[in-house]
Image (cartoon, rainbow, N blue to C red; front, top):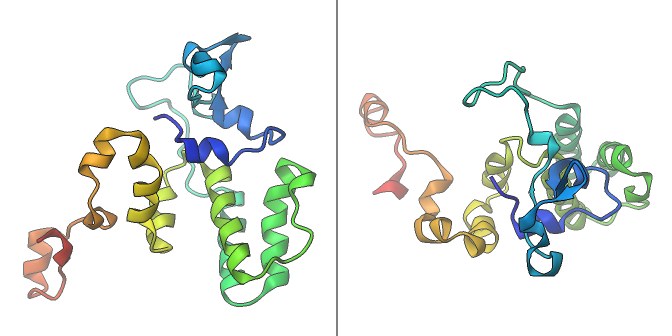
Length: 188
């Protein structure tokens, strides 16, 4: 897993999460890839994703199901959608100020602009925690977002991404059991 240019662009240089999520060095030595192209090469995934003692894909650690920041960002999103700007601002700012007090929003920017900020903050805060696809699906932007970011950088995504990948196919057994009511026609 390699961060896309989009994800790398989300982090201000003063954001302490940047050094945890993006890796340019290890033990004080720069990786060769980020130093390519006059230091503009891609970072690796950072220490947040490093797990000593890993065996295959298991490391013995508990899997994170929910993080408090995730719950706050979901509440901020839903409060904004239901026109509760005060609650939305409190929740979003709690996540932002934990990272850096300077990131706090001083004023509610309006419903649409706030929603865009929540989208970006979810990307910054929850990067690599397996929920991004479901955010993009919930927002109705899965195919467009991938087409404009990952697909521009990776040939395999550009070649294989289809609009129907937004949802998994419904197994034939379930379609038959429902009498054809359950179906995902995008796979036809």
